[in-house]
Image (cartoon, rainbow, N blue to C red; front, side, top):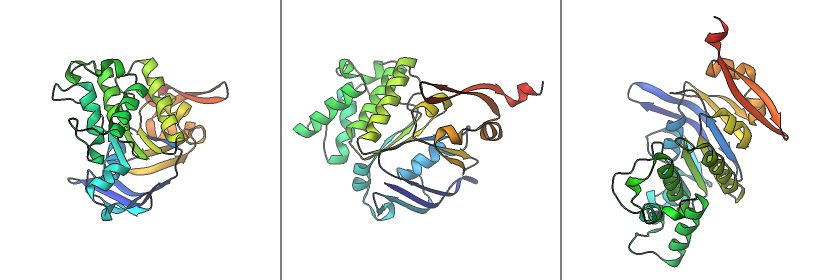
Length: 259
């Protein structure tokens, strides 16, 4: 679904990504992990074509450089972090923006567009908010609406930057389960996360970035080892298993152990 060869990105005088090689297959939820400034957001933006990059990026077997923007928009849905909303449009119209990749406009929706919008509202538990102005929502409600907008695109690749930020615990679990289902339906989901516990529980694969390079890549239970957590994140963690599912719970900073 995604093939990346020697991807590098410079932002100003700083190398944000350096020689990234990565490939994915359909059906996987991939957690992109790393400390602040590791390059997680830059990686997602590069895949979405939002920052200039060197190297090769191929989506569904086609080189991104050869794609028209509209074609790429139908292949990739991007959920940025922050979940900003600047205009007091209704939630339904905000979600309808996700259909613009298919040539739709909120004032002219086909039956397929309307069905996709309604499905996305239901999946994100935002249907009851459909007629409210998006600018009047709480941060968590707005986060779910923006995820609905991305899902309404019905793109086979979903790039989600901190999709659980600002959500209460129940909706964090809902969103992670939804991302798993989205991948299981034949898509590929890359989610930049800071919550190691959610990543260990839900992700099929963890890609850990540090200083713009891939430090580790594999199943979370193997990847999030004590050595890696110490070296990359500067922490210790509790490694647990509950009902057969591995869990990683951050516990102490390494600096606290030396006191």
